[in-house]
Image 1 (cartoon, one colour):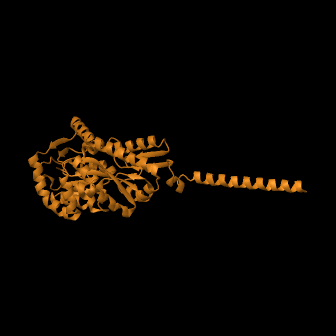
Image 2: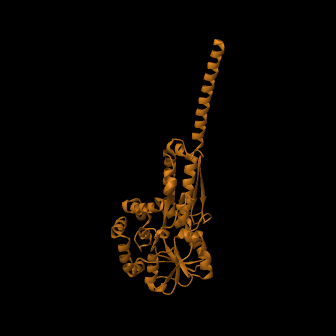
Image 3: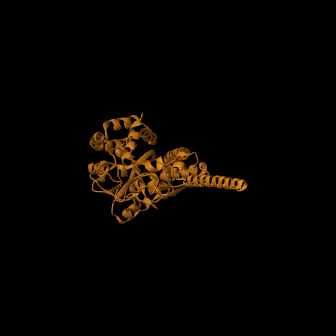
Length: 352
């Protein structure tokens, strides 16, 4: 009888041991399978993710160069755990809907032209201020500084986190009607702009009309005469072959195209320390490449435009540029107040 009791005790003990072991194993499997859950966020393992980067311009542009540098860095340093998909040329989202899709986290990074952001905050009018920055370096210094970062932080109300400014460069005018050398030459022309009240007022002051047309629709609009001309950087003009449908190009650098690299706040906050470090360094790598390539791509694009010879290129003299500055000074003064005189003063200081 005692023998049977001992055997029962041993059997019950073994059952309890196996039961506890099974529970522990199940708990571990549950935790390790939730790579996107709390363990994935708080642990030190690199999270397995697919990140989408969307933009609206062509492949041979500073924006694409920066996006590819981000992709290559993040995928390499994560050992392939993070996949990065880059969608240029409005393949995923266009000008009209990319911001809303970022807010919805349908895409993790977008790089919109800041002129598209003026409805979110008036500070994004800075690149459209006529003749504000002397070069890319001055613009970069502003956005890296206190006032530029202050503007980025204002997007947090939308659930958007501003990361960096990527330059495209100074803008120049093209049109299909006549050569432009003085403010009066723009009278009656209809010019496509990226949109925004400041750009409207600039062209209104020059007695020209302005129309906002999505970038991916612009070639057709120029070809069909919906608008007479447009303003853009050399790399955008050349890569989209606008010289095929524009007889005249005026080199003046009156306003700029600068981009904002933005991410979704919830996505950003969902990254654990190790993963965020890799993605952040990828952002820094992309920013460096985008900035380094902007001036070179614009220089090369201008040479290609000259070599193709399809558009007559007129480079304004310093005196001719001063005439445009004088004409646009009232617009500049008015918008300095709207944007914030402290912001404009800080931006002007970067030209030194």
